[in-house]
Image 1 (tube, helix red, strand yellow):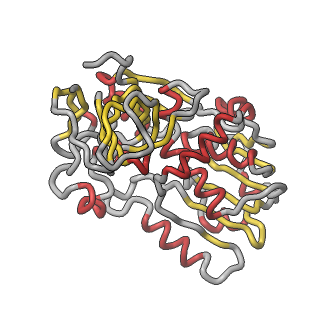
Image 2 (tube, rainbow, N blue to C red):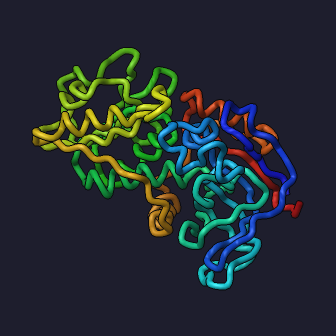
Length: 331
């Protein structure tokens, strides 16, 4: 099969399109013929071995998993002996093995990290859902406990996670404010945001408005400014920060945040995303009911995965970037 293979850490130049063997699957795994794969900032980070502190997980000198990509949508090719939920031919979406495997014609996926593809989505749209959808859902539902009438602000509302967060928060009945750049104002408003702030014209931390929940995907404001924009009992989820610090990425900011919030009534929530099948089911219900629709910036063929990852790594994608892998014809 054809796959995007990485033998060492570096820029996108370390990615090569090669012919390799199909992955073998365990008893509780599914072999998926990949039709499309979503691109995430984490793919860019692991490509470069960032942050350095995470290399014991990724692989010290080179990636443990040499095929990048996690978000996947396609058709079941084969199943392990213990798999009960799927059969060959089923259309599915989910997350491939930890740390990679989706940028290929076939991917091995745990049965528990896979769900039937939403009936109203293309494979490209379905591949855009898992990671960004997981983060938005878990931040809003599990940590923010967002409910009807609450004031929610999404900083970075036009990105992959932000576009899901705006729609999911609206589905919960929240009053949603999206913060974005001038060119994305209309797009964020079209997602259902009640209010849209153009950050090039207005600083949301200085308007006097207070929010019950802030999802910060950008980290372009100080923690003290963010606290000023929170209601007295409000919660902040700091999801941004990037990899400017190559050793610990946003770890330093998170430590400062925990200290800053330790003695106040406002709260801080940090978490590691959980790619569970039950969360895919919830996302599917939201999608099939018309409450959530994936936003796709652009798609690239498998042969142009380098360009796809570079585009995401630059941090200006509107919604999600997707790699199209197969038209369903066996390779």
